[in-house]
Length: 187
Image 1 (cartoon, rainbow, N blue to C red):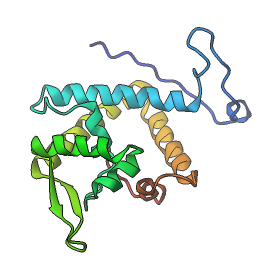
Image 2 (cartoon, rainbow, N blue to C red):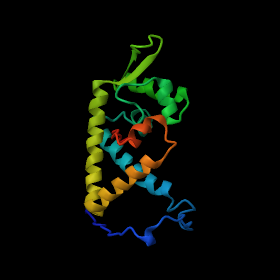
Image 3 (spheres, rainbow, N blue to C red):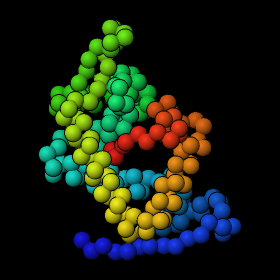
Image 4 (cartoon, rainbow, N blue to C red):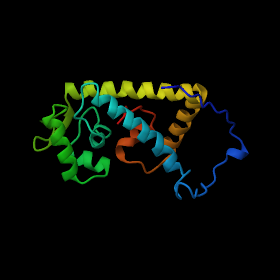
């Protein structure tokens, strides 16, 4: 694959001040919105991560499983908590968790504090897979930084962290991100 350089220099000035995106007749009214501009690289990275996982010993991991991995803290969580964090119904999250348990990526244990509750945690296999996925994500980011420029990628990351820290109504799991705690997620 040819590495096409797309470095762009930019300045933050009055011209770059925020204003609503203009609809683009060729791509629909959402083109250029912040949501679309954030979604495109997310989906591109996720697609590449899942393809790499599939060809590297993790063929059963699907994009739908990302709803579990993105929202599962290291300490574990109940299926209900995972569903709430992911914005899903408990039954759908339970289905995903059960499939990942049967594949060996997750384990369910009794909550040490509340013996009536179960806690979902990653297994050693799940941790190994997640670490591999994170490494793939880092390689993709490095490739993008090379294409757009390392200074620009650093500025983008800094601006996105600033945006994340300024959003008051983020779900509970994201509060760690707002406080500057890096919560790994490449799913």
